[in-house]
Length: 131
Image (cartoon, rainbow, N blue to C red):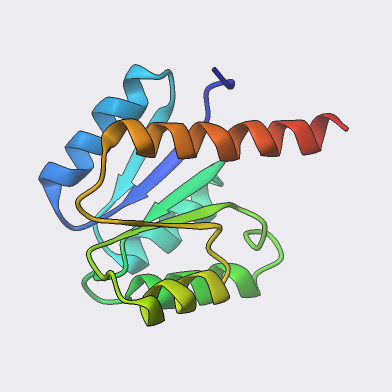
């Protein structure tokens, strides 16, 4: 199991946020949440998470806009982003990855699979910083 990470989960569905927080918290991670795009930007600027779990359909600023803003700022450009969205189209998947997300998970998803993917990216990042 990788070291504990600071994770920001961004989604406007309280039940989904609770599910994500529970499963990642059980694996030792510190999960902070945001329910909108601009709230996510504010939290990221304040706390610099190790990884971001990002829904695309958000009130105010959608997930694509959040990705664009983060990737333009050198201070946030390298934070790994995993998109978690109900949009299953090839186009939304492609656009999310094109805008800088490292992975794309379609809702509904397995919490176990989410934890595995998060742990994988955290381990990769730890390996890069150790070398």
